[in-house]
Image (cartoon, rainbow, N blue to C red):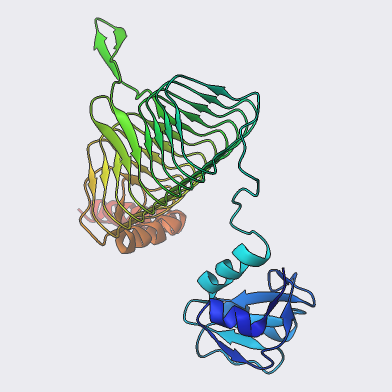
Amino acid sequence: MLMSLKEIAELVDGQVIGDENITITGVAGIKEATKGDITFVANPRYASLMSTTRASAIIVGSGVENNHRPLVKTDEPYLAFTKVMNILANGNGEAVSSPSIHPTVILGKNVELGSNVSLHPYVIIEDDVQIGDNVTIYPHVYIGRKSRIGDETLIYPHVIIREKIIIGKRVIIHSGTVVGSDGFGFAPVKGIHHKVPQIGTVIVEDDVEIGANVAVDRGTIGKTVIGKGTKVDNLVQIAHNVVIGENSIIVAQVGISGSATLGKGVTMAGQSGVVGHLSIGDNTIVAARAGVTKSLPPNSFVSGFPAKPHEKEKRIKACLHKLPELCKTLSQLLKKVANLEEKLNNIK
């Protein structure tokens, strides 16, 4: 597909600086771009590359000037670039396939399929499942009985959605993810771990994206909830009865223990974790590898293990880096004290 720079500016509600009739044929990063591509600068650290990029045009934020290439100025350059990607390069990864049901698909009893549904080879859908409009399900996906899949949802290969699970609209689930696996619940009696039935459900609300190889456990009783607009990275564990608020970011290898509650807009960075039954306030940031062992109020920023206010943790880390030097100084002081004590004893 071809677009003029004027058309791109109209798409992203931006302003053209330079020749608005330039034809754009593709999108690329600022270092990789060639003639015909449009790129973007959202971070000032890359502004110096604007003079050397081979892109035909650049999407930039307000206040950025450049005399080497035509510009499209907009308040949100990164978001604007993603909109252009969706049109020029299908950059959102959504399926490009005509609606169809492959002959190898296995459908249970009373399955309800919406319009324009695409079911790829070897999909298995159990009894009483409801599939919304414009849903695409790739090969080897399993959907358990009485589950519901909302409109425009995209499910990649080898995803398992267990029984009685609710998936909202415009959800994306990547390969290898299991939604609705049993929670880790056992009752220890005389050294034997007796399994506790996991009879709850999972609710994935609208506009959620779940990465590859994520485990979302069903509630023991009740529900596990991933709130609207939340984005979950690869290799994340979300335990039974966890509630994640809207528009949160859960980065790779995070572990959230059972019955923990995360507020809206929470960010959990890579390999961080939360102990069960805790509450994390709205707009809190948990830094990479931090371990949260106590509930946190809204707007917190914590790091370290156990997690502490980030500024305090930085001071602790700075002291630890000086520990070898401090130990050496302490050893010298102890020797001096010993010498002084010896001299005092000799005087007596």
